[in-house]
Image 1 (cartoon, rainbow, N blue to C red):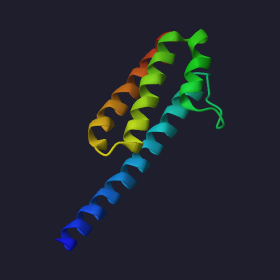
Image 2 (spheres, helix red, strand yellow):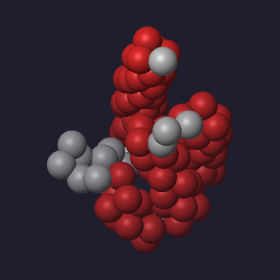
Image 3 (spheres, helix red, strand yellow):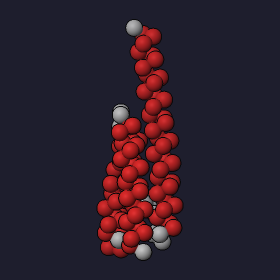
Image 4 (spheres, one colour):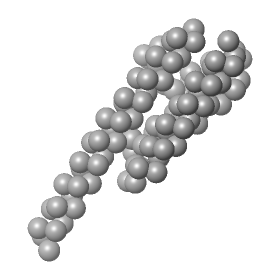
Length: 103
């Protein structure tokens, strides 16, 4: 029983570490997308705060950034990150479309 619990603990730790890495990779990609669109997110500004900044300039992109940021938080902190990976990837694509449409 102890061995099974140890295996489960290692599996959960590995999954969370991979989720953190995936969330960080997707966030860096979003930062590049925002910078390319001319609305870079400063390193000190959290994603949701940057969405508020964008709300005046590009409302559709701001909403997409809110969804993306929430999905990234879910990917990073959720005990079941696989479901949120799809949401995060889809919302990043939505952010890209919204930024392209706004420019």
